[in-house]
Length: 465
RNA sequence: UCCCGAGUAGCUCAGUCGGUAGAGCAGCUGACUGUUAAUCAGCGGGUCGGGGGUUCGAGUCCCUCCUCGGGAGCCA
Image (cartoon, rainbow, N blue to C red; front, side):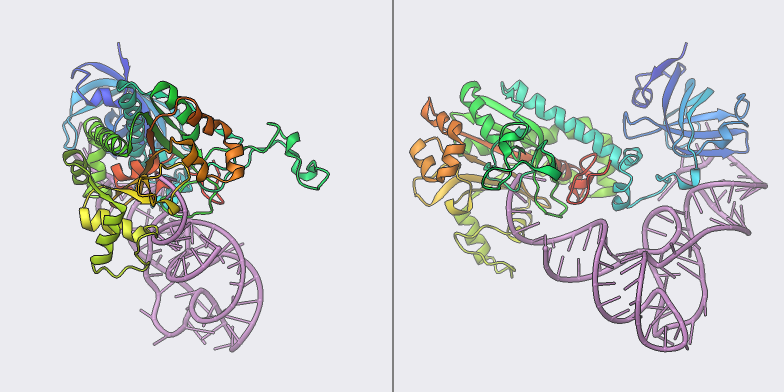
């Protein structure tokens, strides 16, 4: 009796040689031999490798179907798992039956040819690109990373908080928001003053897609002690770079009774844990990235897992940049934000691995970040990664109501009354950060564009698929 | 949004000084072969991103628009 197996379980020794197996998947390639056999390479996404099936010409549908197969066809192959007579694989299937489940209409125009494609082209074929080596590998690593994030936090007593996707606040402090509305745009209700009357909108007021779950997750932090969010986030910024998406995923842990150093410790420990898991669990995919995408990825991940992150104050970073003699395009001075070129110099040239920059001037950071005793800086940190830039941004939060109030305007204080309440009822020091999931994935795989790290990228002008 | 670069066959690209379109891969046909992105021979395949201009003549020069990529800003 022939049992159904994934390609992975058939290849990885979980099936004994000599057993009958059935695998189901899609053809990567087909080679015919006039010796009276054809070679099918069948892929099902379960692992990096495809399995080879040797099909004898004696099968009933060999002439009528097997010879017509082409890349992309869906097949069910049954046969005996045998040691391979050829080079390139240890085992293969000696097929006794091949059922063609789905044909490729027109082999000439099948968008995923048996060759290298540009990532740019593959983005235009986002529905078929998971059939490629690279996107398939990214997909498995992404899934492993997501699972590792949940298991890391779960095993340490963090609660996963599903903060809302739709928010009524337009002042979360990070970027432009997408409006959520059911109003009839062709016939907008108006107030007496002529403004759009959002009181008639679905939620009884203006509403938007969230740009961060942080403010909401803080309220659960001040009850559950250790919490995190992991979900989609939306920014309506017109930014067109390899590091930005309009819809992306973010991990945001938040810890009570914690300060900025605890926050940096958590960021470092989390990244080390995640990289270790990927190296253990996705050896096959990482070997591919190392060989075909970026020959430095493995060394880069090991540099993170094997050594402590460099930490420096913003003031030190400014001094280093000022004295390094590098001809920067943008000025370096205390009080100015660091430009990409500065962050890159620090992480890539000065340190050579991730660096945590802490305690930035208060005027260039968000209102909720805790004011330090010097009155000039806030307890903020950025983790800067070589080749990626800012991979984590976090801070200790301002837990003192009077200081928080001094950093908010009247509109903000009214809108965020509930956020202020958290400082009135049992406030405690707490800290957290945001980790961009697609940026993390690029760092792990060596891929250069976050549009290739998410299945269906949304960017300005693009929401197809 | 700004600055660069690109757009030519299904895909990746070449195309010189302005003279009427090329290669590799893919596809099809055949040969050969326990093959490995197989190999060899042949065949089919083009609105040169759109529009306008200069010219006897434009893929090539000029203007303009569109699209894509890279960088910057913003950030994760």
